[in-house]
Length: 591
View 1 (tube, rainbow, N blue to C red):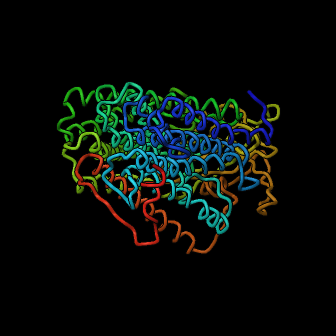
View 2 (cartoon, one colour; view 1 turned 60 degrees about the vertical axis):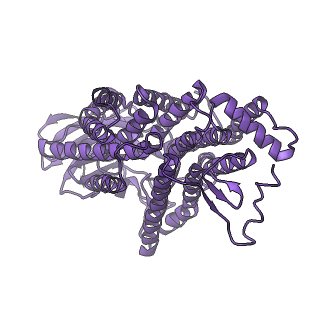
View 3 (tube, rainbow, N blue to C red; view 1 turned 135 degrees about the vertical axis):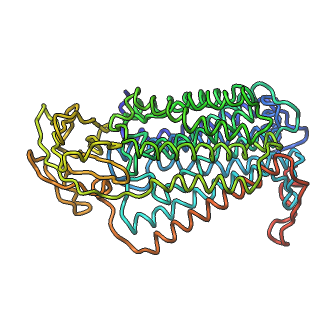
């Protein structure tokens, strides 16, 4: 484990920029300058030619996709570093942190990828279908710029949210979701760039490898919403975990099988596992934070490959429906088995039969809807899949509906007597629940200690008698640690304090570690997010409205680009009013 001081952590920022510089240098070294070109035009042409030589794709496509892949990696490192830091340490001391800076560079990198596509396409005279003021504008570049600008725009609104309601430490605030969604969808735009750039024939092996790598990165991107579960501090119902598995795997793996052919889903899942393993090693090893767990999606990938083997993908609608149904049942079951075997779900226990049936139905709905959306994205590679816009709207509505079902977070009438048995500088936590059957059939029940300055610690509960449980291992109950007993059953998401330190910054008193304390369970966020306070309603209304508008724009851009890349379009041009863009600056001066 490397011991970095705070100043050394900033070295990650120039390091990622150097990495991108090396990539540019490699492309430049392999390319031809086109003869007679100078300055930026020469650099752009050499990069484009180098990209073509490596990938067999249009140079603008390779350069844009590689830039977007780099940007996604930087944003992912920043995101998981930032979440881990909050899990282990609590609030930021300043807005400008290394992890925040990496997130911003990564999201801005999507805009850079868009600019790269437009510059390279214009300089090389690429036959793109859309031309604006003489510039060649790939459809995928519009998606990248929309994602990057929309995600970066969330930063000032995030500051407004925190000023109004306090410094929350949840991934699922509206502004955080906008940031995550923008970066998470970036690899899909990069994949569109690769498909749009297939103007030179079948890509070379490196180009094919780049495509499946980006599909694996897309699986990383859409799995980012699981972040709080990955770190073991979910603040929403545990029922979301299988639904998030179902949605992410069905969308991307169905797309991967359609786009890459036999083995595509398995390759994407394998690259996802490799990328997430590297992230886990970086976060827990080099940065010494809590280890983020992650799914492996092997069962889901086998389900998708099996459906394609049995049915083929020519009748796309049939393939997607069967693949989605299999992922939502067998795939999710396999993933939850991995959660148990890996120790990831140490706080979870099987819910009662009724909730289990509801959850299974929701998972099947989610995966089927996701598979249909993956089929829709696959139109960029196989235009005649049987997908239609109304079908996409229905699938999107079903996905939103299924995700909305576990949204409520209520509180039941449960009391507890908490006893502590000291073991060194920690303590075993014993809980006597009233009523005694309060944890029977619970979806999650255990003790969590976090934000103590070190990796988060958790423990499941061992039953001693009716309503009486004890932690399976001792946990810290002093210093900066915040230690709580969590209980989830149905739509009730509750917690009871074991020990919380005083926090003068927010005026919160200490809740000392007292043997035999009687307490009641409250909503878990009352303890996990003590920094949050009330604020004006207009900020929340504006934030949720803004997120909805941005997401609608992203969905529209994706749908438009998929349709155009898939071949259902004619060349388009647009000239802005006089004075807005002067005579197409890239069409003449850069050549």
